[in-house]
Length: 113
Image (cartoon, rainbow, N blue to C red; front, side, top):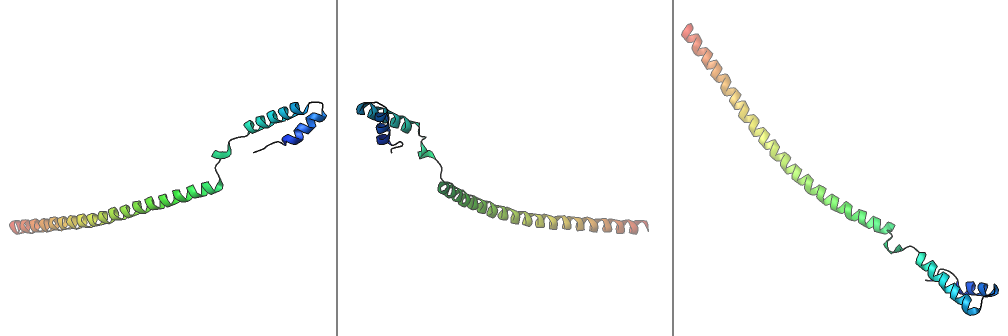
């Protein structure tokens, strides 16, 4: 890809007193140097690339979040079941203790009274 206008540069250098061969050589040197000074744009990130990467990330995130949410819901339901079971057991134990206390008190009143 031509960066400078080599032909125009050569003509200008000829007007300034260089021979055609010298003017063409200097123009080619300037063109080569200009091309070498250009940054490598092949690694430049574009908006389309960023959009595509973001969409890919969003899909992966949504998938992982969905998996996490499903796992969380299963564990939460298990916790609810376990909590309900434990609560029932504690209530039965509490009721049994109350019956025991009442029975003990009744027995003591019978013995004493």
